[in-house]
Every structure is written in structure tokens, then in C-alpha cells.
Length: 123
Image (cartoon, rainbow, N blue to C red):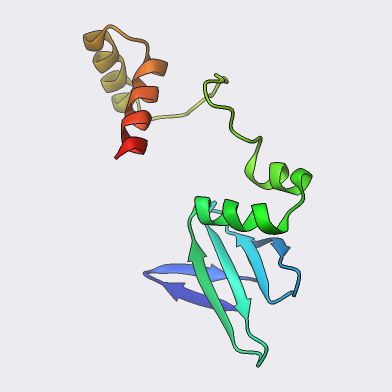
């Protein structure tokens, strides 16, 4: 099934099927872009596609996946305060802005990124 929502294409034939609910009426898919969507079919056979956020997909996975599948799909369960290495490829201009901001604040780039996302999460 293929549907377009707000200019975004959702296609069950091209996306990765991650799992389905106990009744088989709902299926969670992930697009190559990382976006998630639910394919829903009611008992009469009417089908629909519903885009979902990462958090909504995680909530769905918590209900229908075992722990191994959940970790495979969403990664390790977040441990607050645990620091892990991350490698990114960014535009040189963005990197220079980050370095400048970090120097002005007297903090590392890691701390700068942590602050930005901590503030974002609080809003």
C-alpha cells in the first residue's frame, strides 16, 4: 500500500516491516529515511497508513516487541548520564560555528551539544 501525507511518501512495499500487533491488524514500518509509520487494517478490511514519531513508534514497540527486538529496532535503552562516543559528518561551516560557540562559552563541543538538546527537551 502506498500513500502520500504532507508531501511524504509511505510505501509498505519499500519500507522495512518491523513487526505487527497480536491481531495482525497493525504493522509498524520504517522507511529508508528512518521515518516510522503504522499500517492499520480494520476487521472489514479497510486499510490506512498513519505516520508516527520516533517516540510513538517506541511506545508501540514497548507493547508488541520482546526486549531483544526492541533493542534491535530502537537501540539500547537509554541510561541517563551515560556518555557514549558519536561520530558525525557535518558541514564545515556548522563545525566552525560549534567550535566558536564552545570556545565563547568555555565548554567542549560535547557539552555544547548536550546543553542544546537538554534545553530543547525541557521546552
